[in-house]
Length: 80
Image (cartoon, rainbow, N blue to C red):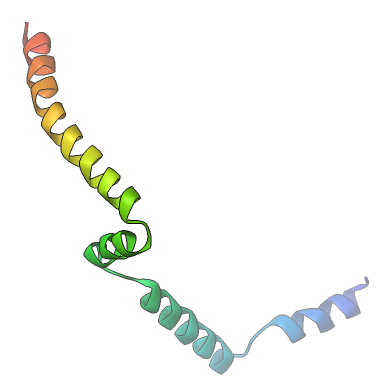
């Protein structure tokens, strides 16, 4: 590929200012459409795979309950 062919390809691929604005708007709309709240994602997980969702909730609850005494114990060890 020589410089002339490269220049021709670049001008073909280089969007104009209105094209860039349109591309940016489409990308932004696509990102906004995919942006969902955390609650909606959890509800979607329950709908898609209820067993996995119940398992994740159970593991999360157990880890919270277990972590509190472990943190107290670690603080007690570090303070001595």
